[in-house]
Image (cartoon, rainbow, N blue to C red; front, side, top):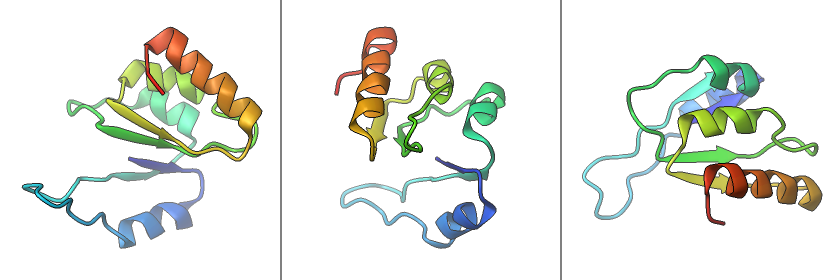
Length: 102
């Protein structure tokens, strides 16, 4: 799942689909949305569990997006950060309140 506030980024993601993983029976399904991530997660409903959520927040961290992550409980989270302080804060929150292991 990719959520970008800029439409060019979400279109770029659609143009580069994921390659199938060796041994997989099908290519992964990746959806891209152009939206504010905080608002998106508040309203998003899915019947299919989220296997992997890639978090690549701005320098100030995930902020309220983390609440949406807790609502949907993705199986795995890949967190990329350019700011060690906000990464540590967000990871601590996800460990304490959602039981994720990093």
